[in-house]
Length: 227
Image (cartoon, rainbow, N blue to C red; front, side, top):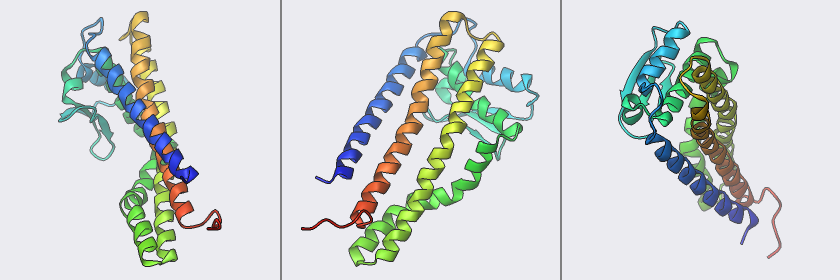
Protein backbone atom coordinates (compact mmCIF):
# COMPACT_ATOMS: atom_id res chain seq x y z
CA UNK A 1 0.00 0.00 0.00
CA UNK A 2 1.02 3.61 -0.61
CA UNK A 3 2.49 5.22 2.50
CA UNK A 4 0.24 8.27 2.15
CA UNK A 5 -2.84 6.05 1.97
CA UNK A 6 -1.78 4.28 5.17
CA UNK A 7 -1.25 7.69 6.74
CA UNK A 8 -4.79 8.67 5.73
CA UNK A 9 -6.14 5.56 7.46
CA UNK A 10 -4.16 6.36 10.61
CA UNK A 11 -5.44 9.93 10.68
CA UNK A 12 -8.99 8.72 10.07
CA UNK A 13 -8.76 6.35 13.04
CA UNK A 14 -7.26 9.13 15.18
CA UNK A 15 -10.10 11.46 14.14
CA UNK A 16 -12.66 8.87 15.20
CA UNK A 17 -10.91 8.61 18.56
CA UNK A 18 -11.01 12.40 19.00
CA UNK A 19 -14.71 12.50 18.14
CA UNK A 20 -15.35 9.71 20.62
CA UNK A 21 -13.31 11.53 23.27
CA UNK A 22 -15.19 14.77 22.73
CA UNK A 23 -18.60 13.12 22.84
CA UNK A 24 -17.73 11.07 25.93
CA UNK A 25 -16.25 14.07 27.76
CA UNK A 26 -19.15 16.31 26.77
CA UNK A 27 -21.73 13.71 27.80
CA UNK A 28 -20.02 13.19 31.17
CA UNK A 29 -19.86 16.87 32.05
CA UNK A 30 -23.31 17.58 30.61
CA UNK A 31 -24.72 15.56 33.50
CA UNK A 32 -23.02 17.75 36.13
CA UNK A 33 -24.65 21.07 37.01
CA UNK A 34 -22.43 24.06 37.75
CA UNK A 35 -22.40 25.31 41.34
CA UNK A 36 -24.27 28.52 40.49
CA UNK A 37 -27.01 26.80 38.51
CA UNK A 38 -26.66 29.16 35.55
CA UNK A 39 -27.58 28.06 32.04
CA UNK A 40 -25.32 28.43 29.04
CA UNK A 41 -27.49 31.29 27.78
CA UNK A 42 -27.29 33.13 31.09
CA UNK A 43 -23.52 32.82 31.27
CA UNK A 44 -23.12 33.94 27.65
CA UNK A 45 -25.33 36.97 28.27
CA UNK A 46 -23.45 37.91 31.44
CA UNK A 47 -20.02 37.72 29.79
CA UNK A 48 -21.17 39.68 26.74
CA UNK A 49 -22.68 42.41 28.90
CA UNK A 50 -19.51 42.59 31.01
CA UNK A 51 -17.57 43.35 27.82
CA UNK A 52 -20.02 45.99 26.61
CA UNK A 53 -21.43 43.72 23.90
CA UNK A 54 -25.07 44.26 24.77
CA UNK A 55 -25.95 44.38 21.07
CA UNK A 56 -24.80 40.77 20.52
CA UNK A 57 -27.75 38.40 20.78
CA UNK A 58 -27.74 34.97 22.43
CA UNK A 59 -29.99 32.57 20.51
CA UNK A 60 -30.82 28.85 20.60
CA UNK A 61 -30.13 26.76 17.50
CA UNK A 62 -31.39 23.22 16.80
CA UNK A 63 -29.08 20.23 17.04
CA UNK A 64 -26.28 19.05 19.28
CA UNK A 65 -22.82 20.68 19.29
CA UNK A 66 -24.05 23.18 16.69
CA UNK A 67 -22.86 26.09 18.82
CA UNK A 68 -21.22 28.96 16.94
CA UNK A 69 -20.78 32.71 16.72
CA UNK A 70 -22.21 34.48 13.68
CA UNK A 71 -20.14 37.64 13.04
CA UNK A 72 -22.52 38.94 10.38
CA UNK A 73 -25.62 38.68 12.56
CA UNK A 74 -23.68 39.54 15.74
CA UNK A 75 -25.22 36.55 17.49
CA UNK A 76 -23.92 33.83 19.77
CA UNK A 77 -25.91 30.74 18.83
CA UNK A 78 -25.98 27.89 21.30
CA UNK A 79 -27.36 24.43 20.61
CA UNK A 80 -30.67 23.97 22.37
CA UNK A 81 -29.25 21.64 25.08
CA UNK A 82 -26.44 24.07 25.92
CA UNK A 83 -28.71 27.11 25.74
CA UNK A 84 -31.00 25.87 28.51
CA UNK A 85 -28.64 23.58 30.44
CA UNK A 86 -26.85 24.56 33.69
CA UNK A 87 -24.16 21.93 33.07
CA UNK A 88 -20.42 22.48 33.24
CA UNK A 89 -20.18 21.50 29.56
CA UNK A 90 -22.78 24.14 28.60
CA UNK A 91 -20.87 26.78 30.56
CA UNK A 92 -17.59 25.96 28.80
CA UNK A 93 -19.12 25.96 25.32
CA UNK A 94 -21.08 29.17 25.90
CA UNK A 95 -17.97 30.97 27.16
CA UNK A 96 -15.99 29.70 24.17
CA UNK A 97 -18.50 31.10 21.67
CA UNK A 98 -18.54 34.42 23.52
CA UNK A 99 -14.77 34.33 23.15
CA UNK A 100 -15.30 34.58 19.40
CA UNK A 101 -17.66 37.52 19.87
CA UNK A 102 -15.01 39.32 21.93
CA UNK A 103 -12.39 38.50 19.27
CA UNK A 104 -14.68 40.07 16.68
CA UNK A 105 -15.24 43.19 18.77
CA UNK A 106 -11.51 43.63 19.39
CA UNK A 107 -10.55 43.04 15.76
CA UNK A 108 -8.60 39.86 16.45
CA UNK A 109 -6.35 39.49 13.39
CA UNK A 110 -6.59 35.72 12.90
CA UNK A 111 -10.39 35.86 13.00
CA UNK A 112 -10.35 38.39 10.17
CA UNK A 113 -7.90 36.31 8.15
CA UNK A 114 -10.11 33.26 8.58
CA UNK A 115 -13.20 35.18 7.49
CA UNK A 116 -11.41 36.35 4.34
CA UNK A 117 -10.26 32.81 3.54
CA UNK A 118 -13.68 31.23 3.99
CA UNK A 119 -15.05 31.90 0.45
CA UNK A 120 -12.02 30.29 -1.22
CA UNK A 121 -11.93 27.42 1.29
CA UNK A 122 -15.61 26.75 0.69
CA UNK A 123 -15.02 26.47 -3.05
CA UNK A 124 -11.95 24.31 -2.46
CA UNK A 125 -13.75 21.85 -0.19
CA UNK A 126 -16.47 21.33 -2.81
CA UNK A 127 -14.60 21.52 -6.09
CA UNK A 128 -11.07 20.50 -5.13
CA UNK A 129 -11.66 16.73 -4.86
CA UNK A 130 -14.01 16.78 -7.87
CA UNK A 131 -11.42 18.43 -10.11
CA UNK A 132 -8.64 16.13 -8.91
CA UNK A 133 -10.65 13.00 -9.65
CA UNK A 134 -12.00 14.38 -12.93
CA UNK A 135 -8.50 15.33 -14.02
CA UNK A 136 -7.18 11.87 -13.22
CA UNK A 137 -10.08 10.20 -15.03
CA UNK A 138 -9.70 12.41 -18.11
CA UNK A 139 -5.92 12.38 -18.07
CA UNK A 140 -5.94 16.17 -17.66
CA UNK A 141 -3.06 16.82 -15.29
CA UNK A 142 -3.62 20.58 -15.29
CA UNK A 143 -7.23 20.18 -14.18
CA UNK A 144 -6.21 17.78 -11.42
CA UNK A 145 -3.52 20.18 -10.20
CA UNK A 146 -6.05 23.01 -10.11
CA UNK A 147 -8.21 20.85 -7.85
CA UNK A 148 -5.22 20.16 -5.63
CA UNK A 149 -4.41 23.87 -5.32
CA UNK A 150 -8.03 24.62 -4.45
CA UNK A 151 -7.94 21.97 -1.75
CA UNK A 152 -4.79 23.54 -0.35
CA UNK A 153 -6.97 26.54 0.55
CA UNK A 154 -9.02 24.24 2.78
CA UNK A 155 -5.94 23.15 4.70
CA UNK A 156 -4.74 26.74 5.02
CA UNK A 157 -8.16 27.77 6.33
CA UNK A 158 -8.02 24.99 8.92
CA UNK A 159 -4.49 26.00 9.88
CA UNK A 160 -5.62 29.59 10.51
CA UNK A 161 -8.59 28.23 12.47
CA UNK A 162 -6.29 26.74 15.12
CA UNK A 163 -5.11 30.01 16.73
CA UNK A 164 -8.68 31.36 16.53
CA UNK A 165 -10.13 28.38 18.40
CA UNK A 166 -7.31 28.04 20.94
CA UNK A 167 -7.51 31.75 21.72
CA UNK A 168 -11.30 31.57 22.17
CA UNK A 169 -10.85 28.68 24.63
CA UNK A 170 -8.17 30.60 26.53
CA UNK A 171 -10.51 33.58 26.77
CA UNK A 172 -13.36 31.32 27.87
CA UNK A 173 -11.44 29.95 30.84
CA UNK A 174 -10.34 33.46 31.77
CA UNK A 175 -13.94 34.72 31.66
CA UNK A 176 -15.26 31.84 33.73
CA UNK A 177 -12.58 32.14 36.40
CA UNK A 178 -12.48 35.93 36.62
CA UNK A 179 -16.25 36.31 36.83
CA UNK A 180 -16.59 33.55 39.42
CA UNK A 181 -18.66 31.14 37.36
CA UNK A 182 -16.44 28.18 38.27
CA UNK A 183 -15.20 26.80 41.56
CA UNK A 184 -11.69 25.37 41.78
CA UNK A 185 -13.13 21.85 41.32
CA UNK A 186 -15.03 22.89 38.20
CA UNK A 187 -12.09 24.40 36.34
CA UNK A 188 -10.64 21.03 35.33
CA UNK A 189 -13.83 19.58 33.78
CA UNK A 190 -14.55 22.81 31.87
CA UNK A 191 -11.00 22.82 30.50
CA UNK A 192 -11.34 19.17 29.43
CA UNK A 193 -14.40 19.96 27.34
CA UNK A 194 -12.57 22.79 25.57
CA UNK A 195 -9.39 20.75 25.05
CA UNK A 196 -11.23 17.88 23.39
CA UNK A 197 -13.17 20.34 21.22
CA UNK A 198 -9.89 21.95 20.13
CA UNK A 199 -8.49 18.54 19.16
CA UNK A 200 -11.26 18.16 16.57
CA UNK A 201 -9.79 21.13 14.67
CA UNK A 202 -6.31 19.60 14.86
CA UNK A 203 -7.71 16.32 13.53
CA UNK A 204 -9.48 18.13 10.68
CA UNK A 205 -6.24 19.82 9.64
CA UNK A 206 -4.32 16.54 9.79
CA UNK A 207 -6.99 14.89 7.64
CA UNK A 208 -6.78 17.62 5.01
CA UNK A 209 -2.99 17.50 4.91
CA UNK A 210 -2.90 13.74 4.43
CA UNK A 211 -5.56 14.02 1.72
CA UNK A 212 -3.39 16.58 -0.06
CA UNK A 213 -0.38 14.27 0.18
CA UNK A 214 -2.45 11.42 -1.22
CA UNK A 215 -3.71 13.51 -4.15
CA UNK A 216 -0.16 14.71 -4.81
CA UNK A 217 1.09 11.11 -4.88
CA UNK A 218 -1.66 10.14 -7.32
CA UNK A 219 -0.59 13.01 -9.55
CA UNK A 220 3.02 11.80 -9.42
CA UNK A 221 4.27 15.02 -7.84
CA UNK A 222 6.68 13.05 -5.64
CA UNK A 223 8.18 11.30 -8.63
CA UNK A 224 6.85 8.21 -10.31
CA UNK A 225 7.95 4.84 -9.11
CA UNK A 226 9.07 2.19 -11.57
CA UNK A 227 6.51 -0.53 -12.17
